[in-house]
Length: 157
Image (cartoon, rainbow, N blue to C red):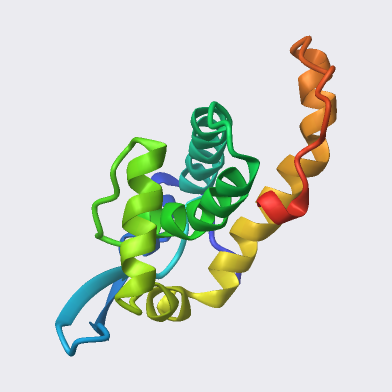
């Protein structure tokens, strides 16, 4: 039987977003870490992640070297997933995010973290990201910024 929409039932549903799992991660050198992983991703956090991605893109676009820019973007999406859906503290500045991401990759922690995030939830984030990229030209036109030389590709996502 379907439930009524009321404060009590809504609060029960919302409480699911507080559910976390603790994952045990071991780095390349045998150091052990416990990481809290969010079981269910809130849509509002996904929206914030997308906003952060845009902000970081703007910060990194100031770089002169296109190759380093592309490389930096490959580090941003995973580090933003970590920022929003784990208890790992991620810095705000784009360059610092890239540095932390690089460190996690070199310690062989990044792949382990990506593998313990709930796959269905990560797929939801990817779907929202693709949707945002598809709608970007329209959004830029509305904002009067539609004269971009090159659109954002899915590889940047």
